[in-house]
Length: 558
Image (cartoon, rainbow, N blue to C red; front, side, top):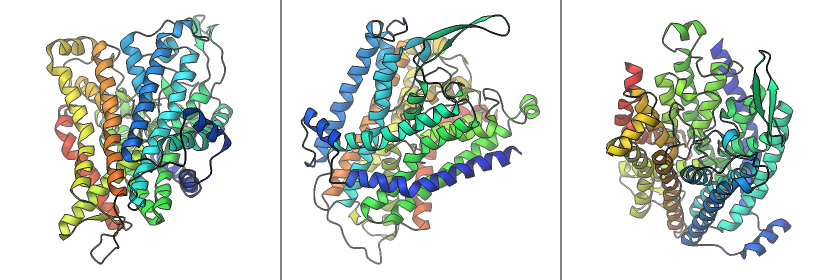
């Protein structure tokens, strides 16, 4: 029966995403290719001093991304440090410096890692003026970078890849904002809380007292999911009944996470002038997503031990209202994208079930990945797949008429190496530096001296480097070392790949398009889909297998 529910849920999501694919993907292509600016957009351009008709080189585009993100980090940090003087602070003090730093970096990088209990740490002004704003613009930055790479493939000898400020404004005002308003109304109708109430003291049925928080939850929940952000208004995230009260809201939140990432391949196909290319990319994403969901669900339903077997599966840490299928579908969705929201506690998953959540991120979150980040990640994988195919047949590889030479493959290779390096180095330093190791083993890890304790630290750095934000929650992450180190990893994991992607876009945009010949690899057929899937899996498996053997594999096979 559980498998019937699981497959029915998967089929429902697939049908809804298929219905959105053409209209949403086509609409986003129009947004980024239209020559007309809205009146409100023209007003924004005048305020910031931007000529929307001017195209930028990749270096200028990158400067815009970095400058905008730096200002975002500073503003969110200052809002937190000034919280005690802000309206709707709910009497809460300012977070300490290292936590404010970590949170500012987390939300600007679209990671939304939270080393704190939100309802007990942040007032409403910081929530909606700082965090919710970054939920919009950090997602818009991700889409903008993906569109810049697509333009690099589509343009011929221009050397330009668009205008960052135009892409940022259009992505926010034309895509994220209107869909979020509609989504917030649907979430309110489904039972999600939306108010400006503070804490309400109530008497429980057992005669005890409890303080119940309120807040503008639905409006933040909508963009939290749509922008693949993931930061919860409450500590329990989407397991909290105020954020995700029932199976209907659960389905809606899953759909919001996947809608844009699964539709962007259609946008890609429209802009490059070949919809078949988008179909091939979305097929890669779909195969990897389905395989991950089935594996995680099977591992949780087959949870070993007397208690899980009596419960019909590993129900510890899961909400009864969602069950195992509703939990694994949600958590597959949010770990295989860069969302990071959870409706069940991943730390309570079986060892191998939790490893699947980790593997989803280690794949580079390309199936379908975060808004924008998933598309540019899978396109980099496609470039490597084309290069490998070219080596096999002994000719210069081409992708959409652009030659993949030494410069392009170096940039793609460096992109692939960035996040594994951050994950492994961050995890290693946590155990190698004597003073840090003592703090990590005595304060951060609750499962000391076990493979699971190691897995918790490995998961934290995997989540940070891939800008996901979920966690194995059996750790104390709000320490100076963890806040600082994870903040640095989040920054590098976000912006070093963006530098490489934009450099790749610029390199491709400078090329003329070469005609296809009999030796050109067709990149819209099943063979290319299979090759791209194989490259994605092999890159992750070979890179991470040794470190996985020390943690979840050791625990799961014990």
